[in-house]
Image (cartoon, rainbow, N blue to C red; front, side, top):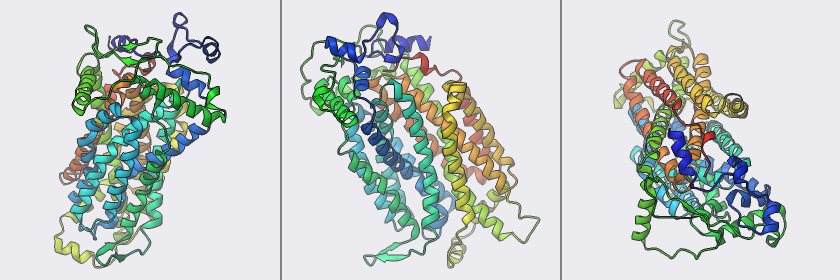
Length: 561
């Protein structure tokens, strides 16, 4: 019933070229040219071709994805190195892992509203530049609370462009390439996770300790954070020349601007004059603000005649219109579907990011533990329980003992970096084969099987008896959970209409960030209660998400709008 309701909703939206029937035949590009009939988005983007512009999108996707993931994950790699400089306890490390996601929670709805009302490009342009300032501020942090503040502000800022980037890329491609775009973004995400430990491996062992301006102490971990801010800088620069999403422009009745964007894409891809672009007019898709009875979303007026540009509205009018546009999110059937997706996102992020962000610290503790007890055969086995007990024991040391232990430079273990590099590499390799798995199993089955497998692997970490076993289980766990997350995000994009898409993605990410905050704050607390509780938490939430995925509507049965 839920799928049927969604199909009836999206039936009022623009029709997807890949799901049209013979009774609703869409003309080819040649037919449109000869009849000079208005084209919808899919026809217009197909006529613009595929080439240099799409490779430019690929470049900006790399930089922007790197910027988003560096903001949320870089702090986990500095924790073992900055422990003495910032006098970090185990709970302090949990706060630093979680605080960025806390900032993301507070800004999710605001960013979604801005993206759906002010445009995708503007959010991406200013969002990445402001994030650059926050990252550079964290690189200059001199104490724990200063770093917490800038990581919170960074999370507050990056949530918008991180969510909007996904929407922007899908709205720049037609049905033929959309599924490939989602997979490419997933591969770039895995690649960014690989670059972080490689960067740490190249920076942390360097003896880079100096004073800046006479009072700012700079260490290697601060240089690392500074480098992590460069993708945000370059992303903002590239978005200066990138156009607004034509899908967004058409959905807001700005067809003249949308047509210019299609012409620009056509010129970049074909090297021909914009006058030779075969599409001359676009189907009008201005939302009808007054919905019909029992209608969950706004209908689309498909009159062929061009309408006048909407008048400028005040801030109050824009806010009122935005609230009216969000109203369908609180009505059937979108309300139930939204809660379903948000719950799954919360569970996946809680399990995935708890393990992912604590892995650098766990591997550092494993290396330190094995070095400390290398001559004692009875206790040298770095089982997971031994590592957790060792970490808790270090936390219980007095502040004086911590200061004394920091009089000598902390040893930098190559094993710590190599283990993190291997885990990240496995995620990237897994994405190379994900396309074949999707075709073999289907997106919904991949999501369900992946979540159940992740839940079992999360609990299997408890039974790890040495560092090699921990490495294998954690690498497999990370690979499967990241692919599952991308599958869910792709389903979220496909299940909701264009006017609500950025908002839905932003809110879904907000719930995911909340899960990350809960997981990273609870993990060190549960560590003090015993060895098993942290892994029961991770495993149970992923298994719950797997159960929910069974009842998620199949995106293949829902029209893309």
